[in-house]
Length: 339
Image (cartoon, rainbow, N blue to C red; front, side, top):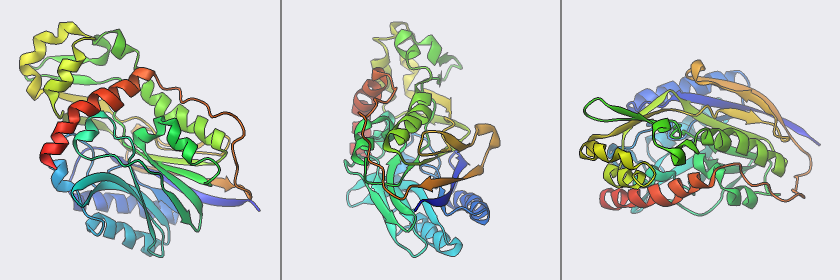
């Protein structure tokens, strides 16, 4: 027999702020969503810290029994909901971007990001494994942000889940502005045809791909995100900049200022709930600020098994090259030195 469950996706501003302040703002959103009838609430990726590329991230990593995990457990129990969100989690000698999903009875499931996006690899490492949370709401497959661009992860959930949950916080770095100490700026559109080919690629990752892949799986999807604008320095800015030069050699004049270079980019509007046929049923836009959107989705009586060939995510190949190869490589040294 089919079941209906009520989901809530959320947005929190991306700008870093003290932990207590961010948890208080998150609790307000989660409480309002629960009062509106949500059974599962998804907070953004790194909701407890905000998002930036700086060395303070190493000190912000918590343990599995740290304040954020305790807060999630308590809020989930108090409101009687399933609650999801990610944080930087210190596990032994390493740091992971861990998505935690709490049930009201205290059970918890953990998923570690498989594919850190480019510069993120300066602050946490990858773990190649999926997580299926066997909850009272159904079997939930878990992902984080750039993971959604990778067909292999979707494929591993095929025929095994009733719902896909993905928390994200993606800066629109296909349309960035690079700032230099002398006040000059460079936009993505000024960086040549290679970078121009990436325009709108975030929309293909965070809007087109979840709709495509959830329809292929035959299950609903919920994705959360941040809102606002990321303003941040870069890990290993010299290495990154030198890698840009073959595609835009005229940038060489900025080389003396590169160590103080910063980048700004709006966060992609990725907060949405999608039905099992790939149709969006709720979504948020940045102008709504810190808010939530609620929708009911149908869980079929029999778990669907895809019969067609899996479609390829509509993501440009150069996006994988830059994120999974180039920027990851130039960021590894920062992680190894600082962790």
